[in-house]
Length: 345
Image 1 (cartoon, rainbow, N blue to C red):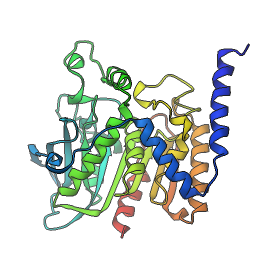
Image 2: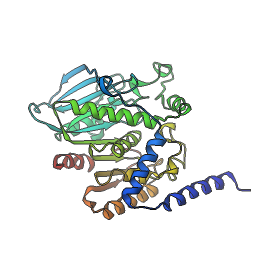
Image 3: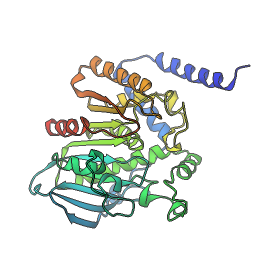
Image 4: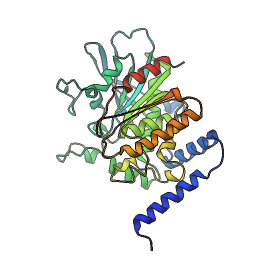
């Protein structure tokens, strides 16, 4: 009799062998993997026709030293409303700016990306680059949209809002409820991200041919799956998340929102990241990250490097593995993203 660990390893190995035996060109495999990803995420109906309006509301507009920061809200799907921060240069009037969808990870929500604390008050002055990522990107000439990911911040379930226990997210309760309906949290967040891209395209300040995305940790899965499914995303930064499922998500306890039932029938995580090709992709990771181990991050980077080289677009892929744990760097990725979006045709 096999021990349980051996049973699970055998199950994984059999699925991997089955995927590796699949025939066809890279393009044909890509089509199959996209179909498998869509199936595994669960069905979410994007609004059509008269129901596709955003009904946007401006909640706040503040002119800071050299940027404008807005808080907006708009409709996504199924009656849901998504609040988001907008940040762009004060001197952007009359120009069409390259734009980026910026996704936060686990924590206080979108306020963490615009220099605010959970209660909306400014963070104390700091020299850390990552205390206000939206500001850094806006100062590089980008129009930034930083949505509140469902399950965090103002978008937690009512049972989790205002509790003395300071529930950090609604990921668990949201995920089990969606799974029981044949859907996933990753799917809901991805399709909301597509709608956020639709909203971004309505902004008169945005050059719709130059849209990118950036996300780290829990935001990394949103950024990567959005870019995989939406060809409008021309450049992507995915940080402190790229790995293999075997080396990270399956190797230790992670938030339930990371799990996509059935996905290993179709793809491993590097395969899903490869769906972004041939469009621009930048991977960043801390070499001492305890929950996305660097050994298997290197495997993902190697896979992607070989893929981009094979299809003749190695200049569209780069990576930065830096001294750090599960933390954002931005040392190379901020400039990379701005430059890629500005050079996009």
